[in-house]
Length: 397
Image (cartoon, rainbow, N blue to C red; front, side, top):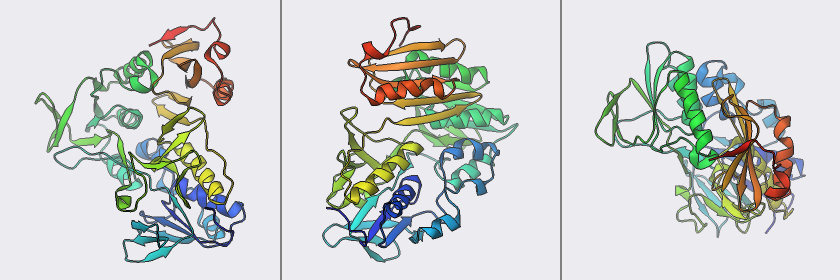
């Protein structure tokens, strides 16, 4: 089922994925009504700087909008900012909004993103919206104390910013090695050591049972005192409003290789779990670049392009003076090998093998051009033995 050039398209989610879909529809010649629904007031804005430039104070919020008002006006959108979608009727082709309005559609793109997971007990800070970042920033600085629960990329970035601002930071991680499931144990240990070297009290293999008034309570009953608590223990896809819709849901909106969840209904961004034919597996990816790419792909396929969405996923992270970049599908890898540089110098390229294929590359402190060739090899499904030189530095766990 495709949408005619004059058909009505509703996009639920007004962040990177939803905006990219709207722009693509116009660029591809769609002249019909495009309704863009976002639950946050104000113009669509970028999220990666929240845990970096906004949290550190290096940027003011006026640098965040993804497009100017003039750019958005040129798209001629029916924009519904600050309004939440609460239901969808696939039979009638309508989306129900929190204000009681029903918006009809001929094609629907769902890009509702995710929300932070929380812990039992007292309210704690999370880091997903601009308001979240500004509220947390006010709690950082010399003489302040912060407990960060979760040493994934978001928690690690926030801990790095807080420490740089003079905050005394305790970083709590339930796994023995932070990020080992994604980047490998040796690289995870290296990243952990960087935090220790910057004065962060990193405690691994440490579970948190609840947030309390003066900090957090660990699983063993120990109290870790902190004036402020940030919970960064992952996210949940925003699909509850779709529970009675008949759409397939399983840790996200389940989509096929074309990003379609049902006839005329497509998913994009953090909320979409789709089949990536390049790697032969389903994925749900929470990265800014991916959201925009999938929003474009969903829009084109809604218009009839019928092209599989098979990207090489990309993400980056800034921690202290380290720039981390990665391409591909690193999780579930069988082998990690350092091909350039060294872990000791904290400047290296690591490549990842799954089965007999090269499936990922991660670079720390290296120019982007150094990993471009690796990305191309991943994109053409290169075999490990063909892509990785036998003279590589060596394996990393």
